[in-house]
Structure formats: structure tokens, C-alpha cells
Length: 407
Image 1 (tube, rainbow, N blue to C red):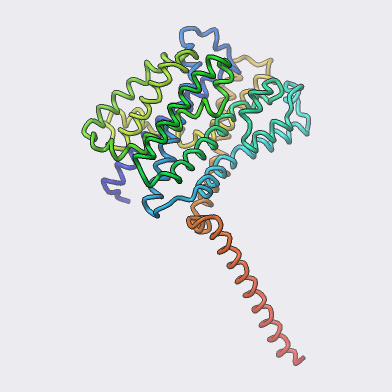
Image 2: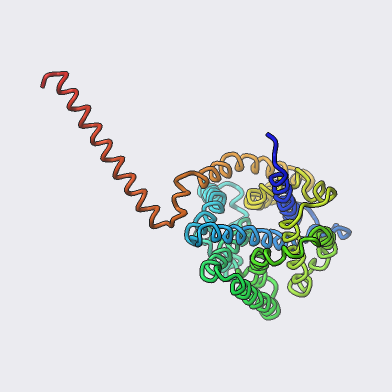
């Protein structure tokens, strides 16, 4: 099928955003390789294996930008947004992967698999409850030794869900007045940036890394970027140079936020701003060929599209192999961990992600565009009408049978 120039441009821009997320998920996987391999001994490339926070910031900025841009487009199209519907859809997308993982962990614990020996002293039941209710961050902060370590990475999805909910509320309340929306998000962001620095200095790095409020910065930066996009369009002639510059700056910024002081200091500010500039530039202009072939490289873009699947499922697997297959060399464990992670990603993409996407794109879900209440009323009416039709059909068949039998 021949694509129009506009659709080709849109596809290329989507691939660029997928590619930057692919870059981020690769760094997340590398940063968690410490579970399997002696990465602390590799001093020459320590920066590569301590890049998790850097990668998460990229995820959050892109996610906040795309989610808020979608809200604003919906508001422009219909005149309003349905916060409950949008948040429910996001909850389903995330829970479709998180809940099966939690169920699997509970099943393995009940079966008393040998992997559970490593987690004696942890509270699997409470950990599961906190995860499925998305209150995991606070529990881990207050009960670090009781929380399941192999599920610790799920603080990320909790932060995403609640901060996107906050952004939804702000857009719903003041989204019709774009300058007010921009000022509200900017003020919220300023408070978050100041508060995270305060928590880092007074409570320490662990608390600063695990609180929802202190990790909300990237999502809010991305949301602010989506809001100012129409004004930024006036500078579209500078989009390509800005895209190139922001991509190149990602490399030194990786070193600038390698340690916590940089991440919670000036380096964290600069990283957020740089990624916002990148997504704005990509939204305004097509990338030069070199960037399209590197950042938008096919395998990298594919990793970005499956980043949620990879993120949710890799960490418990890494922990399992590190705790149980201790007689294997770290090289064997690491290669096996990555190979199984890829297999799980393919399986869950086919069995969970695609069906959920199709379900959320179905006509029944589009009925929710008018709101959850009207959709429930319409569903009840459909059910009533279908029940009446079945009763009429049953009576018709009964009357016909009576006529045939002469009763």
C-alpha cells in the first residue's frame, strides 16, 4: 500500500520516539545486569551499568508527552475529556502485565519452589496487595526488608499511573485555557523539583528514588512539553538542529547523572530539558537520515514498542537465575537471562499486549467516549433489549412447536 507523505512522516516520527524508548530499555536491562554479573568490577564501563535512573527519565518524559498530547487532542476534538475513562484504559494496559506477574509469583510461592527460599523473611502476600493496588512505592520505602526484592522495579508503573492521573485532573480542570494549563503544570513541576532535592538532602537517596512525588518530574516535564507544542511550532525552522543537538547531548548527560548528586542536581534538570527538546523537535519535523537510521533503527524501535513488556518481566527473571543457578558462570546466567527475557517479551506481546490493544480499540470501548456512566446505561439497555429478544424468540419457537404437535 502506498503511503502519503504525511503518513510516512508520522511513521518516521513515531519510530524516533520508539527508538529513544528502545535506547532507554536497553540501558535499564544493562543497569540491572548487576544482579547476574560482577558489573562493579568493570570500572571502565561503570557508567553503562549505572544508567537506570537516566533511562527512566527518558521513559517518563516521552510517556508524559504522548499521554498529554493525546488528552489535548481529545479535548480539541470533543470539547472535553473523560478522566475516568482515560485513566481506566491506562490502568488496564499496565495491569494486563503486572497482574499476571503477581499471580505467577503467588503461585510459585504457594508451590514452594526453590526460588522462594531466597525470599524467606519477605512478605509476599503484602507485597502482592501493595502492587495490585499501586501503593507499592510507600510500602517499599517503609518496609524495605519485608518487600519482595524481585518486584522492586514495579515502583515505576505505580509512579506512572498516579502522576498521569494528576496530569489528567489538571488538564480536565484547566485544559481549555492553554496558558493557565501551562502555568499550572510549570508551577507543579517547580514544586516537585524543589521537593525532590529536599528529600534527597534530608531523607537520603533511597527515599528520593522511591517516592512518587520525587519521581514525578519526567512525566510533568513531558506534559509541559505537549502543552507548549503549539507555541514551539513557531520555531519549527530550528527543529532539526535542535533534534541533532539534543541527541548528541544525551551522551555527556549520561555521565552527568551517573551519581546521585548529579541526578538530583543540575544534571537531572538538564536531562529532563534535553529530552523535552528532543520530543518537541521530533513532533515538529522529520529527522535527518542519519538520526532516522540510528535512533529510529528498526530493532531499537521494536524494543521501544515492547518496552513495557520487557520492563515488567525481566527483573524477577534476573533475580531467579541469580539466586538459584549459582553453580553456573555469570556469563551463562547473563546470556540465559537475556534470551529468556526476549522469549517472554515475544510471548506476552502476542498473548497479552496485542489482544488488550484490540479490545481497547473495540466499539464497546469507544462507547466510553461519552463517559463511564452513559456507557454503563447504554450497556444495561443493550442487555435488556437482548434479553427481551431472547424471550420473544423462545416464545415464538414454543408457539410454533405447539402448532406442529397440535397441542
